[in-house]
Image (cartoon, rainbow, N blue to C red):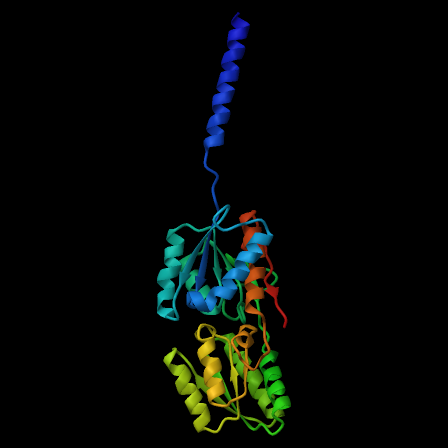
Length: 297
């Protein structure tokens, strides 16, 4: 009887313990997605990121939570948004540009940061090297300054007598943008083109830039990458058409909005690829040891 009683108590304790273990909540990974754009302007990239996560077994709302933070084209909001994600104790922060990565880097040195894109992460001080990042940041680099030269070449092909080109950009101060500008200037010399660099820092500057291009008798336009441009694609395409200026864009979304042509990296593809880094980190990989992937067009 004692043996049976002891055995019964053991089974009962095992059942209770198993029940308690079964009731322990499973920790659901939480991802922070930081963007400088608007929800509409970033929708294609976000869907690509979600697709990449789904392909790797992570479905938003089921076994993963994503906290989206939009700066709405106001860069001064980025530090507060990055700090908010840190307070939420997310497992990984995904960024899509040097300004975003810099804000996240200042907010945390411990939470992993995955760059969906950066023109030059080494020059920007985000990683020690592409092969050994060495800190809490890794991801993808899309440094391809030769793209700018190819864009001018394509414009020259469709407009053989082209001589004046307006270049719309957000800044020439970052290492990546400065290198792209040097490349386009070299290409302009090869094709005997006169460049007009027009800086666009806000939505209001877009129409002003097209008026300036027309006034200076530009014959074509190059639109460089940037969240302001990405979030205002329909307006830019419309202005290019009404200004009767053949325009080449930086990524594939513009032709979907009626743009003439594009040559550059596919930003949604970069976000989809960034999901692989997120999943590796969730499974225990250290960002310091994950090489930065150099993307080519």
